[in-house]
Image 1: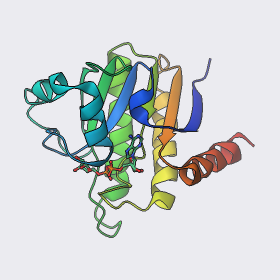
Image 2: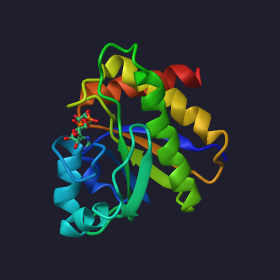
Image 3: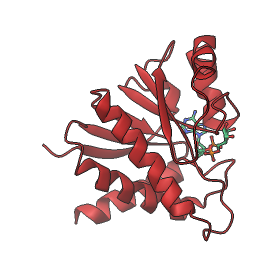
Length: 172
Ligand code: AR6
C-alpha cells in the first residue's frame, strides 16, 4: 500500500502520531516557533534528553522520545537559514525531510507529521518550501515502504490550502 500523504491545519503538539518533526536549530536546545511549542508541551525531560545529543547539523536529524506529548517520538531537524536560495537551501531543506523519514523508518515508525520546516524564523519562502518538501517526501517514500502516513501539519489555513493544491495536482 502506498503511503497516505495529507495536509492538515493544526498545532503539531496535539497530534497522536508515531513521530512529530521539530523544526529546531543546530543546538537542539530549544527556541521559539514550533520548537518552543514542542518543548513546552513535552516538558523538561525533552530538553534534558536533547542536551545529550550534541546538536544536529543543518539538514540532519536526531530522534528522542516524546515525553509528555501525545506523539511517541520527536524527530529534531535543523533547517537551512534562507539567504537567497543560491546557497544550497533547497538541498538542505530536502535533506531535513529525507533524514527525518529515514530515522522514522529505522525506528519502525509508521506515521509522521511535519511542520513547514524553515518557513518561520528561518525565512524560507513558503511558496518554494512546499514543493521542495513534497518532492523530498515522495522520493524518500519510494525507498521506505514501512512509512504508512505522512502529515503536513500546517499552522495556517492558507498553508494547508497550498499543500492540498500540490497534493491534488500530483494526484491528477
Ligand atoms: N504547530 C505546527 N506548526 C507550527 C507551530 C505549531 N505549534 N508553531 C509554529 N509553526 P519556525 P524555522 C509553524 O519559526 O523557520 C526556532 O526558534 C510556523 O508557522 O518554528 O525552521 C528554532 O529553535 C512555520 O510555518 O521554524 C530555530 O532557531 C513553521 O512552523 C528556528 O526557530 C516553522 O517555523 C527555526 O526556524
